[in-house]
Amino acid sequence: MIHKPNFFVFTGGPGVGKTTLLRHLEGRGERVVAETARAVIREQLATDGAAVPWADNEAYVRACAARDIAAFDALADESGRIFFDRGIMDSYGANGAAPWPGLEAAIRRRRYNQTVFVFPPWREIYETDAERRQDWAEAEATFGKVMTTLPRLGYRPVVVPIGLLPDRAAFVLGVASRA
Image 1 (cartoon, rainbow, N blue to C red):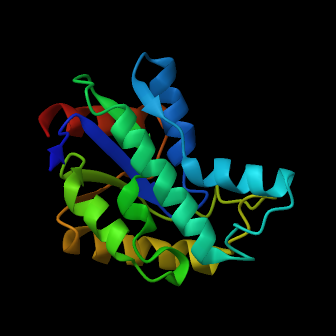
Image 2: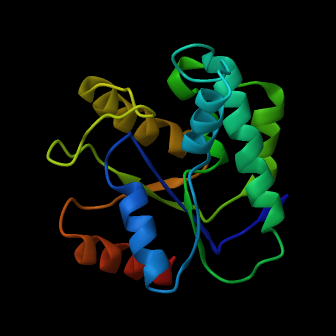
């Protein structure tokens, strides 16, 4: 097992401010890892591939998991704090996809900090685009699923308060410094 208490995950539904906060933290000198899900969707759209959630969700989830595992492994020797825009555990039951043995093993063997930052639905900033097609109801449902799944996988969800970007950053950095 590889336990990385310096690896912090941002998770939650779509359009809740994860990436915006990640970019803000990066601008303040924090090390970050971009979301793999959007990268998979962009590549699939550019090549007319089917591994997108609205065409072949299982292939999409497996592609995201593979990239998240590779990102974790590539940084396994790092000792500094790193914030991830989603993690391996985000593929567990994603969009209703059944977990498979390889994913379950990866979740057991590659452990982030026990504290996982969960971003709640925030109607005022939510929007869809070519890559984010989930409706508001799905964004809300994702939050509930994340809050119940994380403890089952051995993680402690910490909800990031809705608010101004500097306040959210201060909250995350404060919790991370104590975790």
